[in-house]
Image 1 (cartoon, rainbow, N blue to C red):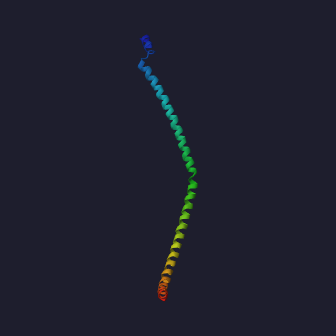
Image 2: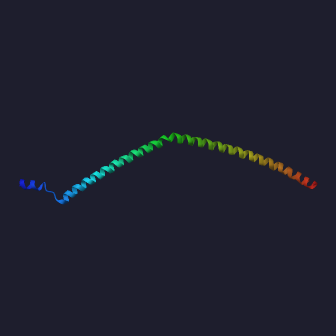
Image 3: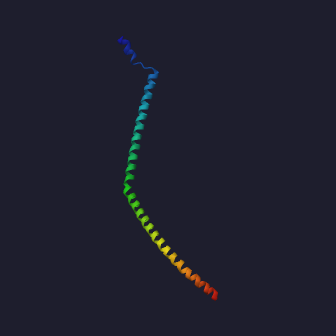
Length: 108
């Protein structure tokens, strides 16, 4: 029995040979996929790191924008108040001028 079993072990069928070859190719392909995934992971980590380096700059610009918006709002409120005062003065002065204009027109 030992003689027949040893003679059977070295013989492999065509199917087994092809299977071994394909399993080896698949293992190599999976190894390449793993390497590429690792490269992608490193690239993404570097990208995130670069993005994080811009965080303080972004915060500074946001603060600047908020300050400028606040100043613009305060300036607009002051302008509105001045415009309202100016409009009231014109309305009061305009009523007086209208009376004066009719007299001037009548005098012409």
